[in-house]
Length: 261
Image 1 (cartoon, rainbow, N blue to C red):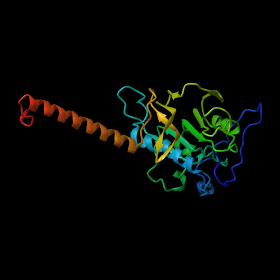
Image 2 (image 1 turned 60 degrees about the vertical axis):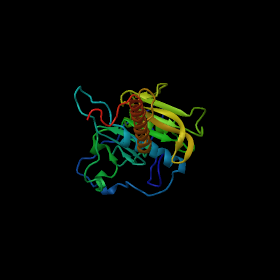
Image 3 (image 1 turned 90 degrees about the vertical axis):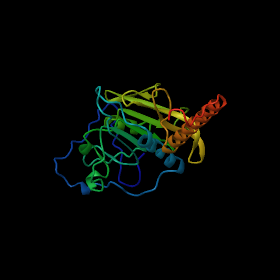
Image 4 (image 1 turned 90 degrees about the horizontal axis):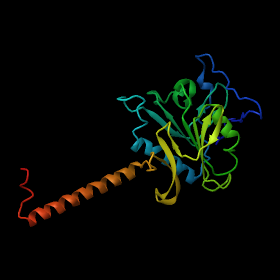
């Protein structure tokens, strides 16, 4: 959804008219003319938690997309929430709830104005995935906003509607084909190496249905806390197994502390 009062007028194409992006400016230009933050609070408590649940686990527990070539290293990525996508000079940015961009990295000098938002001309590409979390009908997520994300080249568009503001569906997944989107029944985004799934559970003390990233087998990408708990449980099981083995050896007349020494 558009966030705050940054003069963000929608520029969806009229029916039958092919949308075109405004040309990028001749560089250098004065990036200080752009408003990259307006500090206007607009999100509700659920959306704030849901956005964090879609960003933190990737940094905590995802190694990134698979290498493009055999023997290659893992590729970098950037996932962020409520950060403006500046796709053309002097056009208002789009501000998705969450976006994921592959093969990019945050610049070292990220406090500089030219690096504080996602400028297409700086990163050289559009993000691969955009996620919108619906809380009302004002964002027009299945209308003009969907057209805009297709127009700027977002490969996958995910709309999570937990309170069914837009219809009976809870989760919509779209893939860009040609100049528009087609709906997907498959929730695994093969071009990304991630999928999305609805997960019933407790996050930060709140029981609800949450949108989560998952692998191709449907297993959710754990948060840092979940991964730490899993590793602690694994260590506890190993300790219990070792203790049972030691007890069995003592029953057979062996001193487990002397074995292998």
